Image (cartoon, rainbow, N blue to C red):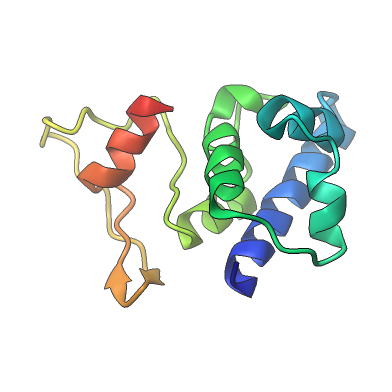
Length: 130
């Protein structure tokens, strides 16, 4: 797993911990147990140990849902980190993939040489499946 993905997950974890410290909520260890049946994921991440893509997908899917955050709102730093790894936040105002009435602006993020657009059909369908 590249450093960009590890750094993004660290940023999301730090933002989540700050929210929990301010407003209460589940610890990262508890989130890790819920999502991956292993409470040590974030401790291992802090130690710089690698992780598998399926774990990245699982945690990104969990953190992309505003309802999983202490106040039901995802801080901008976490949003930016999720977008940077091609996993934009699943907001309630994101349109259905067949709707064209709402167009989101493109992100200035490049993954694998191709721009990642937060409102593209792949990203939206991932939100619907999550």
